[in-house]
Image (cartoon, rainbow, N blue to C red; front, side, top):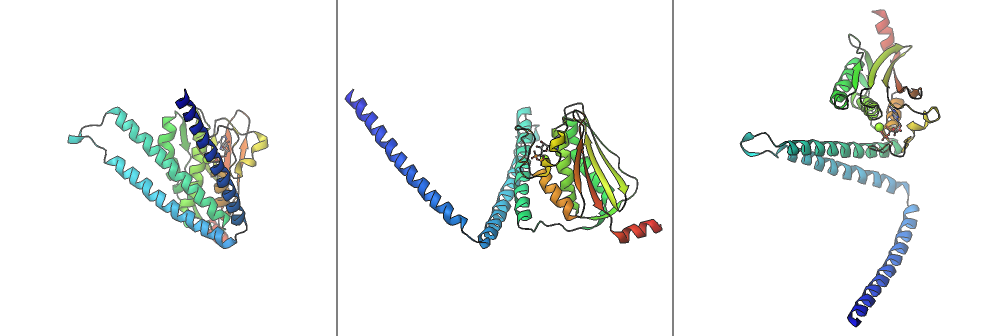
Amino acid sequence: VSADRALRGDLEDRADALEALLVHEREATDAYLLTERVRSDDDVSNRDDFLGMVAHDVRNLLNLVMLGLETIQPPQRKKPPAYVSAGKVRIQRYVARMNRLIGDLVDVTSIDAGKLAVEPVEADAAALMAEATTTFQPAAREKGISLSAEIPEGAMLAVFDHDRMLQVFANLLANAIRFTPSGGLIAVRVERIRGALRFCVSDSGAGIPAAKLEAIFERFWQVGKDDRGGMGLGLYISKCIVEAHRGRIWAESKPGKGSELYFTLPIPSSRRRRSRGK
Ligand SMILES: Nc1ncnc2c1ncn2[C@@H]1O[C@H](COP(=O)(O)OP(=O)(O)O)[C@@H](O)[C@H]1O
Ligand SMILES: [Mg+2]
């Protein structure tokens, strides 16, 4: 019994010591945070550079994970058992998701610093639509959703940053697939309107409450508490990209009837004159 009491005493002593340590730790952290707060903009840009470096390294490692997965092969080129293939696919998805999360964080940091890289050049928007739709076809099919695109015949030339606009399409299509139940429909369209191309990604999914149609473009914003799988940055970044092209992005939705996400891409006036002359 006395050994028991001694042990208990010992445990209590240790708990006290730990508590004291934690108080100390907390004070140290508070002091650290205070000095952090009075730091200058220089440090913010250092922080951004630092984040950039970390993101770069993490991405390299993620690529190595992807490559490493490819080397997991049973001998004699036999087909791997189903659980191995399924496990591989799962890991690939997690890695892809991590890549996207890191990409989004880097983009938001760049936006804050006022230096989101957008390099518009003349390119074919119809081809871009086709590329985006093809990329998401497997994900839609897997969820039992029909994804269709009305790709116009012939080129639709506009001035845009291909990778950035693909990122916008990817955000909209990934959302549409996430918020549309199996058996649903997603359609991608484009129209020529005055001085611009107007794209639309529509879905037959959950829809967006009228009061939230603007809020969804704010950062870290999600309608439902369990709208997980993202951080609520996709539409915010998409808006910044579209506005960097002098376009506009907005959402329309009838409750229970799905959502329509629109964005425009202005056609430069020189190009408009040229195409009208044809
Ligand atoms: N097609 C859609 N249908 C229903 N809700 C949507 C749709 N697209 C976006 N939303 C709502 O807007 C929120 C923000 O979207 P987004 O910025 O892409 O962030 P995330 O995809 O990380 O949740 C989503 O969490 C969801 O609540
Ligand atoms: Mg999203």
